[in-house]
Length: 284
Image (cartoon, rainbow, N blue to C red; front, side, top):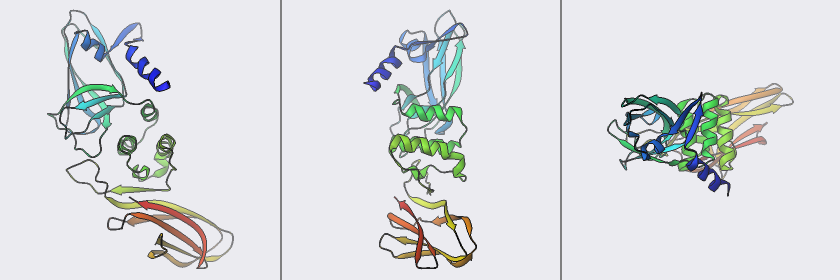
């Protein structure tokens, strides 16, 4: 019922008042034949990746509102759609033609980037829960690549661990939001993927990174190893290294491009073979 109400509200909300001026939704102005609109790509799929070319057909000024959350549908079936992340409000003078850049991100990770010749049409607003991502990224700064990966988790169900930054603390609010929307746990690690020119996301994992924490109440030897679900040793990361008591964090950096898909465990041993802590990760 809430989704239907939200959709109905977005349809009937035609105008927005700002500083005494009435800003009208771009789709409404087109339906009223007050403006023409051409939406084209600029050769990329993130941030300022589309261009709105508008012409005022009237002898009066019009105030245009382009809302965040609109999906732009690519007329090239091989190129990705775009979701707008930032609103635009501006005035068109009588008979004026104007180019306005649009800020958004790809909605289809398994397609390619739009070219400068790619054209788009106005689609429907995205689901309401996607707007939580748009709202967060308008209020906090995150790397564009991490925002893009977060959107792909929602649109194409790529793994949450694909939301990557060299500093996971920097994108923690982003990962936490997406985990809440998908019902998944926030992983302790992130995965980088191979790239190619044919599609935006290859789904071929290349590198896993993260930090495993552990606490020692006394001086002891520590061993850290990676094993598969059958207990087979994949790699020793630390072998019987003496530690004093205290808190520790060990940076994990694994090249996993040739690993089999499946679940793996990082074992932290105190005086091997006593298991002190376990961390699990998946290669998907």
